[in-house]
Length: 352
Image (tube, rainbow, N blue to C red; front, side, top):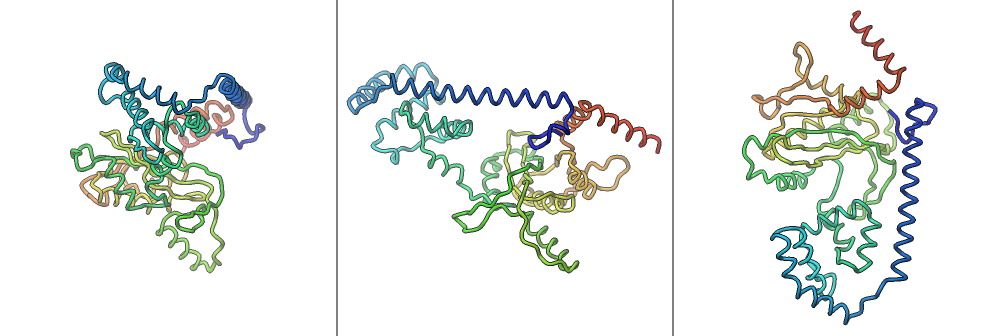
């Protein structure tokens, strides 16, 4: 599979051409952004007007006198009406510390900052509109202290976001999604706890098993390994719009045996919160296939389910992620040599 770290000599000719085309598009986009930023700075310096206290007061008075037009144009509860009220409230505030931002406004600002932190800061510092500071947005995004593994705080936040007390029984059915993504190896000092973040951490069960294995093999304990990827668990509602990143596990490379205690603990915690886990979805990575083989019950044909350890009358079904399967088929068909290998393996399998 082509990534940003694959050398061109390992790619086919169409893949090399596509990578070169994408690289040229990225360079052109960066050049256009730099040109627009320079043009905006020149226009601001040449045509910009600094608003003094008197002009600010006049503009505030005009906005208040014409507020009825905004209220009549946009319905009650709309974002446009909320935005107008928040701007008037911020204009009358004596300082930014005295401003209380509406949660909807904060979510909109978080979306803007996610798109471009530099553009958000430029828009905020221009003074055209009033926006929350970066510190205010950080307080909202860091409301829960992030840590590897499972957390009781995350369980409470999940129950609050799902509003589980008001859900009907069928709406409590959820599916667990697991995926592993690559990250940059590095250590970060955490000021709040005084610890270094970036080492491999697959949970207490896996850590104890690895220590026991080292003792049985009489292997000296090596220095902690730096994580090069992170395994993420996500909770997805089947009959609701719930999408919740549940837990993360920094790792070097996972194996099927290590995923077993992670998923079983996730099932236990979700069932205890009141949810009903009915499915687990993973991609076609070898560790994920090994995990499915370990936990699936023995049955003729494809082993695709296992009994729910918290409710024996219910079953948990195992799914391979369809988008990853389609991507694998596409990659095989785009590479003639790989397609030939697949056909040879299929022919050999049928001959057996």
